[in-house]
Length: 314
Image 1 (spheres, helix red, strand yellow):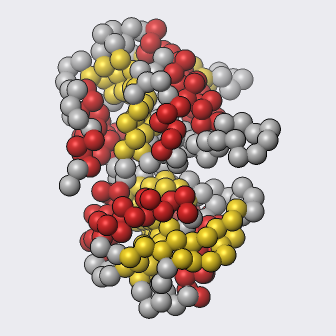
Image 2 (cartoon, helix red, strand yellow):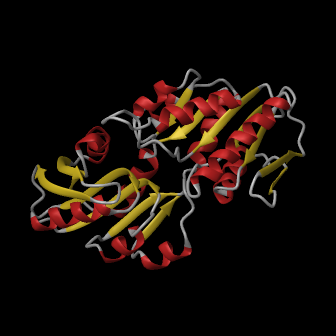
C-alpha cells in the first residue's frame, strides 16, 4: 500500500478519517484555505508522483464550494504527477437533473461529469447515484456502490418481523425490490406527483399495507416532503409501524421539522453527508450508519486491481 495516498476535502472530514483508518493509512497532508475574496487555495504536503491518489469529497451543502474544492484537488494531483486519480464522491450532487424532461432545462449531472473528467479524474467512486444512468455520462470508469448491505444489516438487527417494502415513487421501485428480496418482504409502490422542487403529493398506493410494518427506502431524503406524504398515506391505509431509510440524508429546507413531527417510528441514514447537531437532537429515533468500511474496502480493491462488484454478491 506504499503507493496509495488518500486525501480529504472539507465536506465530511469525519467520514474521510474513518475510511483512512480502515485502509490503514493516515490522510494525506494538505492545506486548504480561502483567499479573502472566497477563492479556494490548496497545497499538498505529500509526494504523489507516480502514486495512486484518492480524494474523498461529498458535494453536499454548500454544494458549489465543495464541488469546486474537489475539482481543484484533482487538478492539483494531476499537476503533481499522480499516476491515477480517483474522485471518491459518497454523495454525488447535481444528480437530480439527469435528463431533459422539458424544454430549456440543463442536464447538470452530465455537466458535473464533464467537469470532473476535464479536471483530470481517472476514475469515479460513488454511492447510490440518484440515477444509475449517470454512470454513462462518464467516459472513465465509475464504481457505483450500494448502501443496501449496510442498511439491510441494520434493519435485520431491529427484528421488526414481516414487512412490506414501500417505494416512495415508481422510479425507486427497483431498489425497493432489492430490499424486499433480501428482507423477505412484499413490495408496494406509491404513485407520486412532484408539484415543485420542494413539494410532492402522493395520490395512491399500489399494494397492501394494512396491519403491516412498512419500510420505506429511498436514496435521498432532501426536504422530506415525499416521506411525509408517503407516511400519511400508508397510515390511512392501515399500516401499524413506519420505518424510513435512505442512503443520503441531505435534510434541507423543512426536512428536520417534517421528520420531527412525522408519524415515523425509526429513521436510518448513512454518513455520506454530515448531519447537523439540530438534526440529531430533534429527529426522534434517528440512527446514522457509517459506510466507511464499504468505501475503504472499495478503495483497497481498486488500488490492488481487484473486483469491486464482488462486494455485493451473496
